[in-house]
Image 1 (cartoon, rainbow, N blue to C red):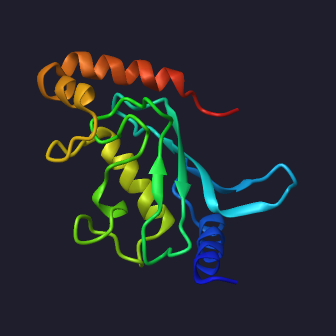
Image 2 (cartoon, rainbow, N blue to C red):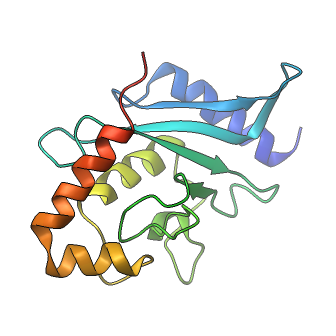
Length: 160
């Protein structure tokens, strides 16, 4: 078993034992029933009391063979409206960017990544915009931004 696979198996076990409330994360199951430990399907709940509340946002984590030395790539659906999410859906967050650009460390856990992304939803990093329309709306038309976020939350209702 590779180092990446071993670490991801450890993360999976830790997640099953103690995960943040409302979050979902599991390795992708392939059509033949096999598990792809390097690709995870996750859902991040919007924080209560924020415009993101009520949404359960799908996120895909892609782990390279070099994990945990390199961070996973994190993707919301393409076109996700947020100042720190590229048009492709890729998340721009320091803890999932390698050093020296970012602050990735091999000790960062799956739970820390997902909680960090949840925090980013309501507190964008305006110093590092990835999507200009969302960034400009956030900076100059906050009421409109909030309305668009609430509309997006309605597109991602909780799973049954």
